[in-house]
Length: 212
Image (cartoon, rainbow, N blue to C red):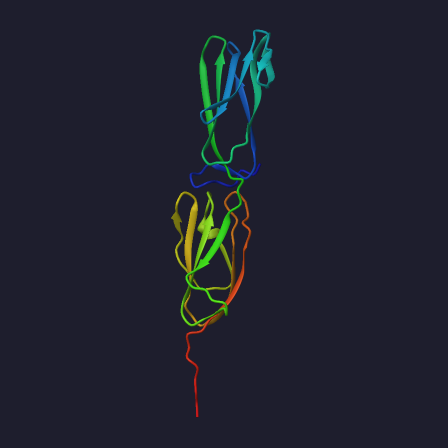
C-alpha cells in the first residue's frame, strides 16, 4: 500500500485495509508463543511446540535451530476504519522472556462529504445585496489547502472545525458579478468527495441609471 500519506499526527494513512508483515525471532531458546492484536483486542495466538510446529493462528517458520523455531513470519491484517490504530505483537521464548512491539497507523475509507447552504435564497437567482455561502466538509483527515474552489466565486474565509470531524468556511459574494462556482476536495488518504454542483447567480447592488 501507498505509505506516503500521513495523518495530522504523522502516522501512516491508508484508504483501504492493510496487511502488515512481521518477523519474530529468538536465536537462543527459540519461540514458544506469539500473540498479536489491534488496540485492546487480541486477534490471534500462535503456539510453537518443541519441534517447531505451529498451532492456533497461522504463521510461517522461516528458520530453525535443530528442532526449535527461532524465526517466524506473521501477516497482520488490519480492517479498521479509524485513526490511531495500534497493531501490536507479543512474543514469549521457551524460557519465559517476553518482548512486545507495536506500530500505530490510520485507515480512512470514507469519502468526504461537501454541503453548501446560503443565508438568503430566491427563485430568480438575482440578488440586490451581499450573499454568503456556508461551505461544510465532513472529513476526519482534513487539510484546508487541498480544497479546490472553481469558477467565479467570492471571498473565502478561514476554515474552522465544528464538532468531531466537520470543517466550515464562509464564502462572501459582495461584489456585483455573475457568479458560477463549484467545490471539490480529496482527503489526505486519497478519497475524493462528490463535487458540489456548479451554482449560478448574480449579485447586483447598483441602481439603474436614468438619463434625459
